[in-house]
Length: 463
Image 1 (tube, helix red, strand yellow):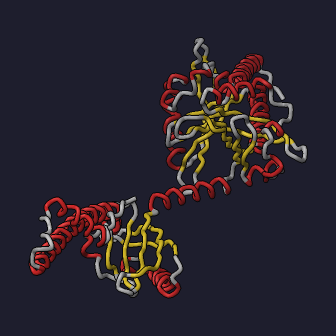
Image 2 (cartoon, one colour):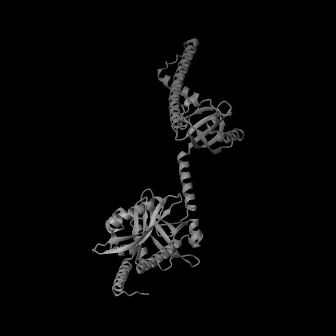
Image 3 (cartoon, helix red, strand yellow):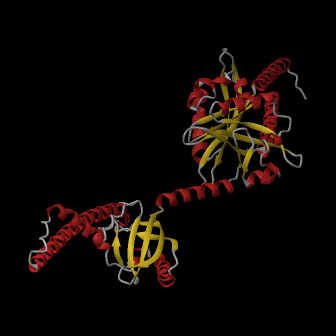
């Protein structure tokens, strides 16, 4: 608080001070025998000296009061000009009469260019009418007003401020409006970020659960309620274990707590139970939450229902197992080739019939040259190229060179698959072991040849 200058002493006090200073210096008054005229002159002289001293004392007090007033004004100027918020004084008509440096900095303008401008001209056009209405209400009623508006800097940048206005006297019997400008830019950004984050959480397609450090639930989003059937009031203060079905092993929960207690994110799957008793699968990511000082404040879980996916995966595994059994019985392998990435996928039976190590992965098409006889590979390449370019299916017999030195004969078939744009994206096909059939064919031909020779020599026909 700025100290007020000391008040000037009253006139009686000044005269007493002057009398005190003159008392030792005053000459002795003449006796009764002296003429009365001289006594009157001496008394007048004394009065003049007292009055002179009174003026000197008064000037000294005025100088001291002026110094204190100048100091108070300087302090007030510093407080006003360097305040963390902007201050403006407006006339009753809304023109700027005075502005501190903070206002000029906020608006990106030299302070002298603000003077005598209509305050509303600095407001974003879409908010100017609102600003004028509040200023009129302050001027007409004298009631303080507070409102948020967008203002425009000299470079065109728009920013939010909180305006707080009140009415006062201008010192000449007139009216003025004093207004404070509080920059809301950082607060608005924080508010907008929190609003967006809140909206994202509320509308998230995954369940979100927030707990305190003990695991007691503090918040769940609407998706949690949709999936589990439990509302927020029903689960507040409860533990997520209310969803336990008994099918998730204790080892999983121990691993979860060991992981998040160490400050890491845990990821895993739960088979949980809904409020109505139905079982459902969830994939969960659970992480510790810390404040800016690093102190643990709770945990957040993001969980996705994967019941349908688990059913699909189970069905897919069952189909794959059935296909593998069928291929093994028929000795037929299957393959796929993603043309764009040159990625080849083999079925288990492909690895088995070609005696290749599954852990090594399927070779690329170029890498399959070592699997087949060079002559057969030379015949296969143009057929594959036609299929890749034109989508022409093919069928060809190939001699496979197996790692153990054995040669077996396979019937290879290939087909093309097109994408939505009509371009060929994938080739797929099968490899059938026909070695036994070819041997039987050869044996049959040899038998027929032997029979024909025997009939020729015996001159006997057959029917």
